[in-house]
Image (cartoon, rainbow, N blue to C red):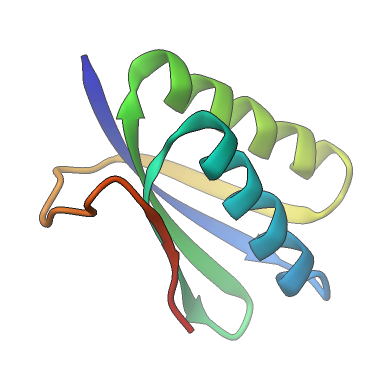
Length: 92
């Protein structure tokens, strides 16, 4: 079963590092979606994939938060509004 989430992350100084971590996890777990800047202090991630892979993706973000790369994040269900064509994009 497929699941999509919208994740808003508050980031500190490590925005580029976070982009790298999120995109690496998305590639490893075959997650499709995108990461975009939301405002000066946060980014928004749209992630779609199987329920198991999305849960593993969230676990990686929780670990990043515990390692203090993220200040906080908010997760909400998301209805897929476009075809991400099986890839994960970084939009700047």
